[in-house]
Image (cartoon, rainbow, N blue to C red; front, side, top):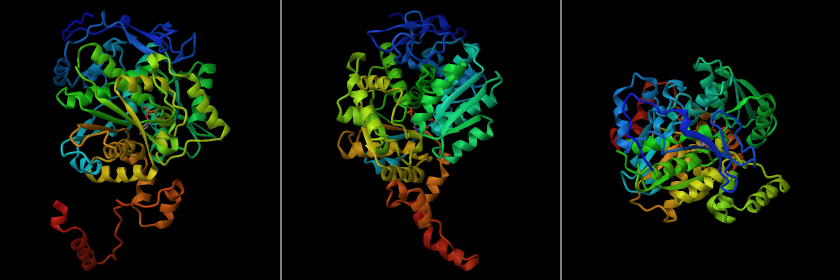
Amino acid sequence: MSVTILTETRSTGTEVAFQQCINPVCGTTVSIDRAIFECPKCGDLLDVVYDWDRAEVPDNLRWFERKWSNRNDPADFSGVWRFRELLPFVSKDRVVTIGEGQTLLQRSDAVASYVGVSPGCLQLQYEGMNPSGSFKDNGMAAAFTHARMVGAKRVACASTGNTSASLAVFCSSTTYGFKAIIFIGSGKIAYGKLSQALDHGALTIQIVGDFDDALERVRQVADRLGIYLMNSVNPFRLEGQKTIMYRILEANGWEVPDWIVVPGGNLGNSSSFGKAFIEMKHLGLIDRVPRLAIINAAGAHTLDQLVSHHGLTWRNGLPNPDVIRDYYHHLDVEHLKADTIASAIEINRPVNLKKCLRALDFCDGVVREVHDQEILDAKARVGAGGLGCEPASAASVAGAKLLREQGVIAAGDRVVCILTGHQLKDPTVTVAYHSADQEQFEKVLGSRGVRRAGFANRPVVVPNELESIIRTIGLYATPESAES
Ligand code: F0G
C-alpha cells in the first residue's frame, strides 16, 4: 500500500472509487456513476470501495487539523467533507453540504455514574446538533452528493422520521432542484419529525403499515419511476456516516476509545462505523480498534436474536442464509411486527444486516436489547446530565448500563454512546414520562409496557400567588440542591 501526503491545494477525484458487491463469492463491481443500490448479479448489498493505492490519503489523522483554520470554506467547515480524503468518491468542487456535522462529544459524569463507569469515562456523541437534528445529515451529505453526480432530481426514502426530515431539509436548503418524496407508516412517526417533513415541503406519502412495509414499497416505486433512493441501503449514505467516528477520534486528540455504543435500527450506522475502522486500520491511521456494542429495542430485536441467540456471524462474508431466512419466516408466520416506544428503531428487517455483521466481526462487537422502560429511564438521565436526546438514542446509554452490569464493559473503560437524535424530536414521549397526568402516562407509555417514571421531574402546580411560589422555590430549589 502506498499513501501520499496531500498538499493543501489538491483534491481527490472519483477515479479511485467504485462499487462492489459485499458477497466475496460474487464480488461484482459497479461504476461509481450508477445508482442501483443492489448487486446487479446477485442482489446483495453494495459497498463503496476505494483503490487506496491510488488515492491521496494523509499518513496520519492529525493532518486533518489544518482544515480547522479554514472554516469559511464550506467543504472544510462541514463535519463530513473536512474528512473527504477518507471518502474520496467525489472532487471537492462537487460536494453537497448544508453545514452538517458540527457536533459535540460531551463528557458526562452524571451519565457515567448512571451507567456505572468511572468519572471521565463516559462521553456522549451528540448528533442532535446537525441541521435537521439527527445523525442522518452526515449520510445525506454524501448521498446527495452522489445524487448530484448522477444527475438525479427526484429523491425518495421510507422513514421512521429522521431520514425523511433530513432528506426534506437537504431538498429545501440546496439549489440543485431536488424534489423530496417520503414514505412513512401511519401513526409511526414522532411529531417533531413529521413537522419537519411538512414544513420543508416534502411530498409526504403515508401508508397503512410500518417502516418495513414502507421501505419495501419505496424500493418498488424508486425502481419503477427511476427515483433516487436515499435509504441506508444506498452505500453512499454510509460513507457520510463514517465521519461520526472520525469526529469522535478528533475530539479525543485522535485517541481511540474502548467502546462505541450505538442504537441499532436499519443498521446503517453500525455498518458504517465498522467500515470506518476497517479502512483506518488498513491505512495505518489507527493502531487499535474500539469494541462495538449495538443496542436493539426489545420490541425490535432482530439483530440481537440472530446474533446472540441464533449464532449468526459474518463468516468471511458468507453469513448463513438459512438462519436469516428462517427468522424472517418466523416473523411472517407469527405476524410479528416491530413494537417499541423508540419509534426511530422500530424496525424488524434491517437492510444492512450483513454489513453490520462485518462490523461486529471486525470490532469484536456485542449486541444487546433493552426494554422501553430502560430506554426511557436512560433518556431521563441523559436529559438530567447531558444535552438530551430522543428515545431511540437513549438505547445506547441503557445498553451501556446493561453491559456494565454484565461485566462486559469495565468500570475504567472509555465509553462513547452515540446520541443519534435531538431531544425535541419526540416531545410527546418526554412530556408523558415527566407528566403528573396518569391518563397521559398510560396512553402514551403504559400501552408499551412502561410501568414507572423513576426519574420523572414533575411539574409543580402552584397557585398564582407570590408567597406560595416563593415557598415552593424554597422547598424544591435550595442553593445547596442546585449545586449538588
Ligand atoms: N437513532 C435514531 C434517532 C434514528 O432515527 C435511527 C434510524 C436510528 C437510531 C437507527 O439507526 O438505522 O443506522 O441503525 N432512523 C431511520 C429513519 C430508520 O428512517 O429515520 P440505523
